[in-house]
Length: 315
Image (tube, rainbow, N blue to C red; front, side):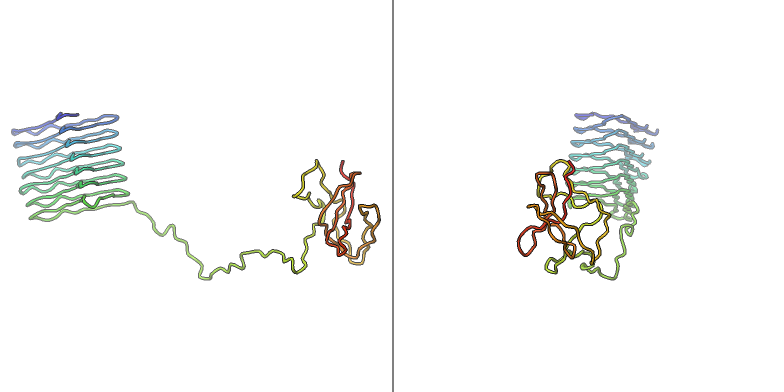
């Protein structure tokens, strides 16, 4: 509906006004002073106005209204949409002059009011202000927008909002008041959240960081690292791999006793070294031309490399 279009059900005599019901599957849009209304201008009850869509938008002074300007009740303005958006001075209104109150009911996932838009059930004269009920996940009022259930001499209407979040700009407002009567009640209901669910009781004894860190071996204390048992030492990570040149330990994995003599080892020049009294770890290895792998120790005081143990190359 655009450019002043109008859909309405009204009564100006003694009979009741009819209902207006608009249901669309996708988008319902009112813009450019367009109006949807169910009204009574005489001695009859005003009808109800129901709008249902996936998305409802009102732009550029568009209005959806239920009203009674006589002594009889106004109807109910009911809107159901996944998204309700009012822009540029648009409004959803239930108004009465001297009769009983009309009401506005909004059910949506998102309700957004911008540019001085309004949802109101204001009442004049002695009429009681109508109620406003909004059920939505998010409600936002921006740029001087209002939700109001105000009255003059009668009691102000009540505003009930059920939502997970309200966003209200400083120049926007939600009011339920009466100029000379009793103010209405504004009730905002949020989902019940157990704020203690995420709390964990902390220990009263502080943790000593020193007990959580494993100390490494101190080289200054002449510590050493020796791998024994089946499997032996892996290849040197600083050198290239040569096929399956992995040294395998064929021994039983038992360490010799301190008084047992060690085996004779063959040096790179072919000479035989005497037995050593204690186990010494290898620090490097070489492969001879005949395929023999030689484990060496560079840490002798003489500076000469001493073979540790020799085994034939797997190839």
